[in-house]
Amino acid sequence: QVQLVESGGGLVQVGGSLRLSCAASGSIASIASINNMGWYRRAPGKQRELVATITSGGITNYADSAKGRVTISRDNAKNTMYLQMNSLKPEDTAVYLCFASMLRANYWGQGTQVTVSS
Image: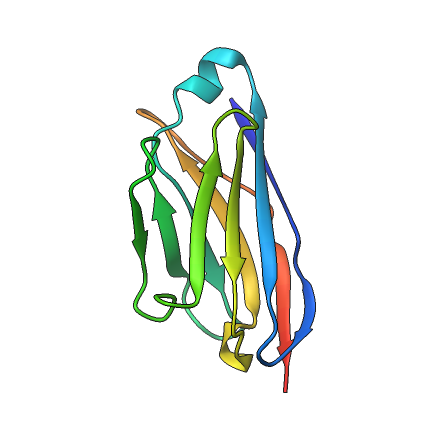
């Protein structure tokens, strides 16, 4: 099993920046079995939305709403994934959840709240 813990959320003004972290823990074998990781977000009254993903080899993919403002990265030595968000907008307000996918299972964190005030 893998446990994921997000951090870095908070209240920020429009145009500000935040860096979210997702720390993975578990057995060495489990951690080594993680393939893709990424971030979803869930805004009030809206469906869960994919923000960005990153493969174990560092190939990234972004939602159109995130391109140019968001950078996903991954430090495999620290078992941690990051989401750098710049030029934040009120519509970025959501709970941000990280996930890790393995061959036979997907794991999720509890989420971290990001609130962008205008």
